[in-house]
Length: 285
Image (cartoon, rainbow, N blue to C red):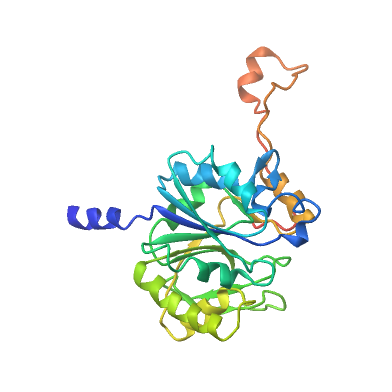
């Protein structure tokens, strides 16, 4: 019993890979002078939220693939990394390639299990807890307004297949990918081999999900599903997405709100800070 527990603890992941090379064109004009990951969501940037979450979960290393306005990211993390060691990989072709190329750029710098995270995600920190072990995928139940990659999951909560588009989806067993993955060393090496094939073939404008899709079909890669339905998360691609995310992740109230016509003995039953957001576009309701 104790042996199994120790083995389980040893597998706990302490390295993260952040893909932050893109220009974030759909968030213009916010991304003209600042990279997407530094977009403020109610006065706190996406990157700062991530760093706080990684520190909270005991991460020791963060590798950031940069491109667009990389100096901004370096300057920001210089004083905000906490206990995490930050390393950078610059992608010189960030303007003309997609995230498959960014992931490929990290092939030589990471040789341990890691969590892969994209730079446009905000999420409740507690959601990361079950992603700290290898070969997992974050998913959420489909909503009518969501689009992008989906997966089907078998009764053992393992991914059966990736699907490229959530639109026109009539399968109730499909789940939206949250774009957070964890990979073991052996899985990562197999992914690198497949990434090499894609890049050599000039397929540098694909999403890395194309690689995962093929490998799952070939049964050379397996992901256990981790469900993100019970706490808020949001993927921010557009100004509209940002507005919705800000309703899910409100600012902390720094000053007490005025209270009128409430008797003192009833104050303890009055929660002035409770918010229950429901936003079109949200997977949390």
